[in-house]
Image (cartoon, rainbow over all chains, first blue to last red; front, side, top):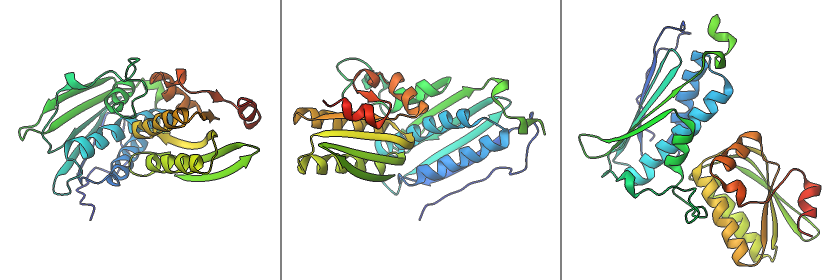
Length: 163
Length: 112
Protein backbone atom coordinates (compact mmCIF):
# COMPACT_ATOMS: atom_id res chain seq x y z
CA UNK A 1 0.00 0.00 0.00
CA UNK A 2 1.71 3.16 -1.13
CA UNK A 3 -0.82 5.72 0.03
CA UNK A 4 -0.70 8.58 -2.41
CA UNK A 5 -2.72 11.73 -2.77
CA UNK A 6 -1.49 13.28 -5.98
CA UNK A 7 -2.98 16.21 -7.84
CA UNK A 8 -1.75 18.76 -10.32
CA UNK A 9 -2.94 20.25 -13.54
CA UNK A 10 -1.59 18.03 -16.31
CA UNK A 11 -2.17 20.47 -19.15
CA UNK A 12 0.84 22.03 -20.87
CA UNK A 13 1.12 25.40 -19.19
CA UNK A 14 2.11 28.78 -20.49
CA UNK A 15 5.19 30.23 -18.85
CA UNK A 16 3.30 32.45 -16.41
CA UNK A 17 1.19 29.65 -14.96
CA UNK A 18 1.84 28.03 -11.59
CA UNK A 19 2.36 24.27 -11.54
CA UNK A 20 1.64 22.54 -8.26
CA UNK A 21 1.51 19.02 -6.86
CA UNK A 22 0.73 17.60 -3.45
CA UNK A 23 1.77 14.13 -2.30
CA UNK A 24 1.09 12.25 0.90
CA UNK A 25 3.38 9.22 1.13
CA UNK A 26 3.80 6.49 3.70
CA UNK A 27 7.30 6.18 5.11
CA UNK A 28 8.81 3.67 2.70
CA UNK A 29 11.99 4.27 0.74
CA UNK A 30 10.23 2.94 -2.36
CA UNK A 31 7.99 6.01 -2.26
CA UNK A 32 10.97 8.23 -3.03
CA UNK A 33 10.53 7.00 -6.60
CA UNK A 34 6.94 8.30 -6.57
CA UNK A 35 8.13 11.67 -5.30
CA UNK A 36 10.78 11.76 -8.01
CA UNK A 37 8.30 10.89 -10.75
CA UNK A 38 5.97 13.72 -9.72
CA UNK A 39 8.82 16.24 -9.80
CA UNK A 40 10.10 15.03 -13.16
CA UNK A 41 6.58 15.34 -14.61
CA UNK A 42 6.30 18.91 -13.36
CA UNK A 43 9.75 19.81 -14.67
CA UNK A 44 8.86 18.41 -18.08
CA UNK A 45 5.68 20.48 -18.16
CA UNK A 46 7.65 23.56 -17.17
CA UNK A 47 10.17 22.88 -19.93
CA UNK A 48 13.20 22.62 -17.68
CA UNK A 49 16.38 21.09 -19.00
CA UNK A 50 17.39 17.57 -18.07
CA UNK A 51 20.30 18.93 -16.04
CA UNK A 52 18.04 21.15 -13.94
CA UNK A 53 15.62 18.29 -13.33
CA UNK A 54 18.51 16.03 -12.34
CA UNK A 55 19.81 18.30 -9.59
CA UNK A 56 16.30 19.11 -8.34
CA UNK A 57 15.59 15.38 -8.11
CA UNK A 58 18.88 14.84 -6.30
CA UNK A 59 17.93 17.37 -3.61
CA UNK A 60 14.36 16.07 -3.39
CA UNK A 61 15.52 12.48 -2.87
CA UNK A 62 17.76 13.53 0.01
CA UNK A 63 15.01 15.48 1.75
CA UNK A 64 12.51 12.65 1.29
CA UNK A 65 15.02 10.05 2.51
CA UNK A 66 15.75 12.14 5.61
CA UNK A 67 12.02 12.49 6.33
CA UNK A 68 11.48 8.73 6.00
CA UNK A 69 14.63 7.53 7.78
CA UNK A 70 15.46 10.16 10.39
CA UNK A 71 12.10 11.91 10.78
CA UNK A 72 9.51 9.15 10.68
CA UNK A 73 12.01 6.35 11.33
CA UNK A 74 10.29 4.27 8.62
CA UNK A 75 7.14 4.06 10.74
CA UNK A 76 4.43 3.22 8.21
CA UNK A 77 1.84 4.94 10.41
CA UNK A 78 3.56 8.26 9.81
CA UNK A 79 3.29 10.23 6.57
CA UNK A 80 5.64 12.36 4.54
CA UNK A 81 3.88 15.29 2.88
CA UNK A 82 5.45 16.91 -0.18
CA UNK A 83 4.30 20.09 -1.89
CA UNK A 84 5.79 21.20 -5.18
CA UNK A 85 5.37 24.59 -6.79
CA UNK A 86 6.86 25.89 -10.00
CA UNK A 87 6.25 29.54 -10.76
CA UNK A 88 8.16 31.37 -13.46
CA UNK A 89 11.67 29.97 -13.11
CA UNK A 90 11.50 29.16 -9.44
CA UNK A 91 10.93 25.67 -8.04
CA UNK A 92 9.89 25.31 -4.42
CA UNK A 93 9.64 21.96 -2.67
CA UNK A 94 8.34 21.62 0.87
CA UNK A 95 8.65 18.32 2.72
CA UNK A 96 7.19 17.63 6.14
CA UNK A 97 7.52 14.59 8.38
CA UNK A 98 5.79 13.57 11.57
CA UNK A 99 8.93 12.83 13.56
CA UNK A 100 10.39 14.54 16.60
CA UNK A 101 12.51 17.14 14.84
CA UNK A 102 16.26 17.69 15.11
CA UNK A 103 18.78 20.41 15.88
CA UNK A 104 20.55 21.63 12.75
CA UNK A 105 23.52 22.63 14.90
CA UNK A 106 24.13 18.94 15.63
CA UNK A 107 24.77 18.17 11.96
CA UNK A 108 28.50 18.41 11.14
CA UNK A 109 29.95 19.56 7.85
CA UNK A 110 30.71 16.32 5.99
CA UNK A 111 33.63 17.92 4.16
CA UNK A 112 35.51 18.64 7.40
CA UNK A 113 38.56 16.36 7.47
CA UNK A 114 37.34 14.54 10.57
CA UNK A 115 34.03 13.68 8.92
CA UNK A 116 35.10 13.07 5.33
CA UNK A 117 35.21 9.28 5.67
CA UNK A 118 31.96 8.95 7.59
CA UNK A 119 29.44 6.77 5.77
CA UNK A 120 26.47 9.03 6.57
CA UNK A 121 25.57 12.65 7.23
CA UNK A 122 25.72 14.12 3.71
CA UNK A 123 22.01 14.52 2.99
CA UNK A 124 21.56 18.13 4.08
CA UNK A 125 24.88 19.02 2.46
CA UNK A 126 23.57 17.56 -0.83
CA UNK A 127 20.41 19.66 -0.56
CA UNK A 128 22.35 22.86 0.07
CA UNK A 129 24.65 22.17 -2.87
CA UNK A 130 21.90 21.67 -5.40
CA UNK A 131 19.27 24.18 -4.27
CA UNK A 132 19.46 27.96 -4.07
CA UNK A 133 17.87 28.11 -0.61
CA UNK A 134 17.16 25.44 2.03
CA UNK A 135 15.35 26.31 5.26
CA UNK A 136 14.33 24.06 8.13
CA UNK A 137 11.55 24.66 10.63
CA UNK A 138 9.34 22.72 13.03
CA UNK A 139 5.81 21.69 12.06
CA UNK A 140 2.99 22.39 14.55
CA UNK A 141 3.15 18.69 15.47
CA UNK A 142 6.87 18.85 16.27
CA UNK A 143 8.15 17.24 13.06
CA UNK A 144 10.57 18.73 10.58
CA UNK A 145 9.60 20.90 7.63
CA UNK A 146 12.18 21.69 4.98
CA UNK A 147 11.54 24.20 2.24
CA UNK A 148 13.94 24.22 -0.69
CA UNK A 149 14.00 26.62 -3.60
CA UNK A 150 16.00 26.58 -6.78
CA UNK A 151 15.86 29.54 -9.10
CA UNK A 152 16.62 28.60 -12.68
CA UNK A 153 18.07 30.87 -15.26
CA UNK A 154 15.59 31.47 -18.12
CA UNK A 155 17.97 30.13 -20.76
CA UNK A 156 18.03 26.74 -19.04
CA UNK A 157 14.41 26.19 -20.03
CA UNK A 158 14.03 24.14 -23.18
CA UNK A 159 12.41 25.26 -26.44
CA UNK A 160 9.22 23.37 -25.55
CA UNK A 161 8.49 26.15 -23.09
CA UNK A 162 7.85 28.51 -25.97
CA UNK A 163 5.16 26.39 -27.59
CA UNK B 1 20.82 -1.13 -9.63
CA UNK B 2 22.41 -3.90 -11.66
CA UNK B 3 25.88 -5.32 -11.39
CA UNK B 4 28.27 -7.52 -13.31
CA UNK B 5 31.51 -8.94 -12.00
CA UNK B 6 34.60 -9.98 -13.89
CA UNK B 7 38.15 -10.69 -12.87
CA UNK B 8 41.14 -9.60 -14.92
CA UNK B 9 44.28 -11.19 -13.52
CA UNK B 10 44.10 -10.35 -9.80
CA UNK B 11 41.76 -7.37 -10.18
CA UNK B 12 38.03 -7.66 -9.49
CA UNK B 13 36.02 -5.31 -11.72
CA UNK B 14 32.50 -4.62 -10.46
CA UNK B 15 30.42 -2.93 -13.14
CA UNK B 16 27.47 -1.05 -11.68
CA UNK B 17 24.54 0.44 -13.56
CA UNK B 18 21.34 2.28 -12.71
CA UNK B 19 20.69 4.12 -9.45
CA UNK B 20 22.80 3.68 -6.34
CA UNK B 21 20.29 5.01 -3.87
CA UNK B 22 18.90 4.44 -0.42
CA UNK B 23 17.28 1.12 0.34
CA UNK B 24 18.52 -0.76 -2.71
CA UNK B 25 21.73 0.08 -4.49
CA UNK B 26 23.58 1.26 -1.41
CA UNK B 27 23.28 -2.10 0.36
CA UNK B 28 24.08 -3.99 -2.83
CA UNK B 29 27.48 -2.28 -3.18
CA UNK B 30 28.43 -3.36 0.32
CA UNK B 31 27.42 -6.96 -0.40
CA UNK B 32 29.42 -7.02 -3.65
CA UNK B 33 32.56 -5.64 -2.02
CA UNK B 34 32.26 -7.82 1.09
CA UNK B 35 31.88 -10.97 -1.01
CA UNK B 36 34.88 -9.96 -3.13
CA UNK B 37 37.02 -9.64 -0.01
CA UNK B 38 35.77 -13.00 1.27
CA UNK B 39 36.90 -14.52 -2.03
CA UNK B 40 40.34 -13.04 -1.50
CA UNK B 41 39.96 -10.33 -4.15
CA UNK B 42 41.83 -7.40 -2.59
CA UNK B 43 42.12 -5.21 -5.68
CA UNK B 44 38.73 -3.85 -6.61
CA UNK B 45 37.67 -1.51 -9.39
CA UNK B 46 34.15 -0.07 -9.15
CA UNK B 47 33.13 0.73 -12.72
CA UNK B 48 30.48 3.47 -12.51
CA UNK B 49 30.04 4.13 -16.24
CA UNK B 50 26.43 2.92 -16.19
CA UNK B 51 25.42 4.64 -12.96
CA UNK B 52 22.73 7.24 -13.59
CA UNK B 53 22.33 8.61 -10.05
CA UNK B 54 23.96 8.24 -6.68
CA UNK B 55 22.50 9.73 -3.52
CA UNK B 56 24.22 10.43 -0.22
CA UNK B 57 23.51 6.90 0.98
CA UNK B 58 25.18 5.48 -2.11
CA UNK B 59 28.17 7.78 -1.66
CA UNK B 60 28.25 6.80 2.01
CA UNK B 61 28.38 3.11 1.14
CA UNK B 62 31.21 3.71 -1.32
CA UNK B 63 33.12 5.49 1.45
CA UNK B 64 32.38 2.63 3.87
CA UNK B 65 33.59 0.10 1.28
CA UNK B 66 36.74 2.12 0.70
CA UNK B 67 37.44 2.13 4.44
CA UNK B 68 36.74 -1.60 4.79
CA UNK B 69 38.97 -2.55 1.87
CA UNK B 70 41.79 -0.27 3.00
CA UNK B 71 41.67 -1.69 6.55
CA UNK B 72 42.07 -5.16 5.05
CA UNK B 73 45.12 -3.85 3.19
CA UNK B 74 43.34 -4.03 -0.13
CA UNK B 75 42.70 -1.28 -2.67
CA UNK B 76 39.45 0.07 -4.05
CA UNK B 77 39.45 2.47 -6.98
CA UNK B 78 36.74 4.08 -9.11
CA UNK B 79 36.48 3.75 -12.84
CA UNK B 80 34.70 5.77 -15.53
CA UNK B 81 32.69 8.39 -13.66
CA UNK B 82 29.90 10.15 -15.52
CA UNK B 83 30.16 13.96 -15.47
CA UNK B 84 27.38 14.21 -12.86
CA UNK B 85 28.89 11.59 -10.55
CA UNK B 86 32.20 13.38 -10.98
CA UNK B 87 30.50 16.65 -9.93
CA UNK B 88 29.11 14.96 -6.82
CA UNK B 89 32.50 13.59 -5.82
CA UNK B 90 33.95 17.07 -6.21
CA UNK B 91 31.33 18.89 -4.13
CA UNK B 92 31.60 16.29 -1.37
CA UNK B 93 35.40 16.55 -1.66
CA UNK B 94 35.59 12.76 -1.88
CA UNK B 95 37.49 13.18 -5.11
CA UNK B 96 40.47 13.71 -2.77
CA UNK B 97 39.89 10.27 -1.23
CA UNK B 98 39.30 8.01 -4.21
CA UNK B 99 41.64 7.14 -7.03
CA UNK B 100 39.60 7.71 -10.20
CA UNK B 101 40.60 6.17 -13.51
CA UNK B 102 39.23 6.95 -16.95
CA UNK B 103 39.33 3.51 -18.59
CA UNK B 104 39.84 -0.16 -17.80
CA UNK B 105 43.44 -0.20 -19.04
CA UNK B 106 44.37 2.68 -16.73
CA UNK B 107 42.42 1.06 -13.93
CA UNK B 108 44.28 -2.22 -14.20
CA UNK B 109 47.63 -0.48 -14.46
CA UNK B 110 46.90 1.61 -11.35
CA UNK B 111 47.23 -1.47 -9.13
CA UNK B 112 50.73 -2.33 -10.24
